[in-house]
Image (cartoon, rainbow, N blue to C red; front, side, top):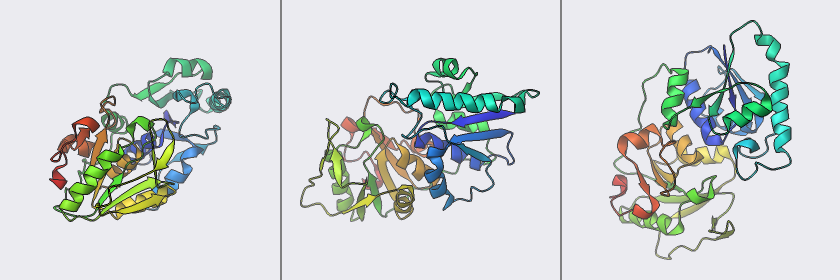
Amino acid sequence: MRRLFLLRAYGDFVIAIRAILNSPQPSDTKIIASNHFIPLFEAINEVFDLSPLDIEFQDFGINQSQLNFFTNRYLFNTSTAGQLKQIKKYLDDHSIEYIFSDCENFVEQSSRLKAFEFFTKHKFTPIVKKSKVYNEYTQFFKPSFKEIIAKIPAEGKVLILPDARIQKRNLPQELVQDIISLSNQKNYPVQVAYFKRVSQVNKNGKAETVQFKTDLIFAQKVYNNFSELIQLIQASDFVIGADSLPIHLSNLLGKPHFILYPNVVSKAFFTPFAIQNKYYAEFDKFEQDSIPFLS
């Protein structure tokens, strides 16, 4: 018997859902997920039938995008200790269920694992031990499907999603303008969609009004929740975005996509589609022919 605790970011959750969806059911892995994933789960359930999946949602007090203990920003927040105590309590309360079985606990990644074990007083094994995250999840769940890579269309509607959870991954405005310009040259309809705002986060972490060149032709959109983001992705033919949740949703939904990222980010979370097609480029190495779909 295996127990997998899903406690990290939304992108990690989408990668896990993709693997679980395509694994034999019922599974020998019990999934315990933080209930901060429930809105995302419900949004995905509008597209895929997730009812056969045996996922138990638990309130561990997580009110950010992931467990505070796994972040730098909220590591020393006053609620961090409380979250760890709730996880430990869950483990202690349910230990009797597995006292006579060979049960192994898993978490998503190995980062701060030893310290996490120290505070929860329980042993864990990480799913991701190396660098290719999608491959590690596939090996863990042993999905019964062959990877279906989305086909690259000859033309179509372009969706640019500049936002990322980690600020340094946000697409620079100049880069967004270049992509809009390339889309205009091909006469492709293009949308730029931001989360809850029509603004750009500057280097100081503050939102500022986005001032685009006046000769660019595009639609500017705002999405306020996961369902609206999924609808935008579904309505597009090609997605361009940061190495973050929207790209993982695009992969789950079978949409062709291109990843843009700063040179300080590894390729560990890149999707199978992006890896196979080499559909990715660093911010400062982006050129007019970097995205074959637009060249």
